[in-house]
Length: 384
Image 1 (spheres, one colour):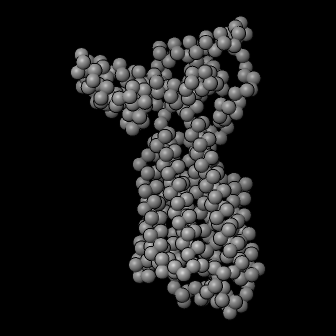
Image 2: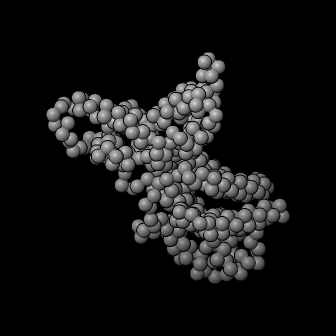
């Protein structure tokens, strides 16, 4: 038990350090930092139960029971955190108070059954709470809530990732990858904790101490890893606007016709527009802008952004992300085989062609050529 308290104390201490850091960090992502700090706060409150003394619990029983219910804030706050990262114009609104519903319902049940009872009833409840109807309902609410929010988070990540690919040209895979990973890790830790709670109803009580200690360590490692990742890759994540839609959501809508479309049949018009687009990409090289979007490219070409988005994402067999990166990679291939650029580093070249990270450049380059940039350059100079 002393080991468990030591681990819990260290975990809570580090969590509060991370909270302080997130709240005082100067960043353009103030709301996401605040939401994640809130998530860490309720995680720390939940973990603090390990070293809560029996004297405190018996004296402030209602407060201790209320502390148990604060776990219902965790996954909704993490969901709002994901939304705040995925959508650049996300703001907390009154409608988000709906996420308090499970917390309010459980506390109303406890208020009528536990909070206003006498000392003897409360003492009995503390020692036998896992057998009471109120706590069984509480446990069911936690599991249902966690399942619903986990599915909602994964759906948000999938949708916004597709919107990114259809509208942006800078790398997002790293961010979505670790957001997806952290969601799965939290889910694994949560259901491991659920398994721990089930053990309370069996004869394997001794395993609880070991499992509690294991959960504390894992939770601390996962949370610290997540914060470090968020700090390491802030430049990769740019939220999308909530007004943006996926192509399939408006692909069947009637788009405004251009003059060329009025003179030509649909296939000829699409071919004509694609040729204009390719010519513009080759001659003007808008892809050199690392922050190029469908909207900014459409403005440069004096073309409706929705029309350009449909043209690229529905008629080139590529997302906008891959479409732009193809030009960047082809430019990089030219530079890597240019003798005048022989002394340029891979890092210098990737910035010159519009990439903003080495990892995204290497991934895109290998996808296009089946070689890394270094391998491609070495192969060329060996054969020439």
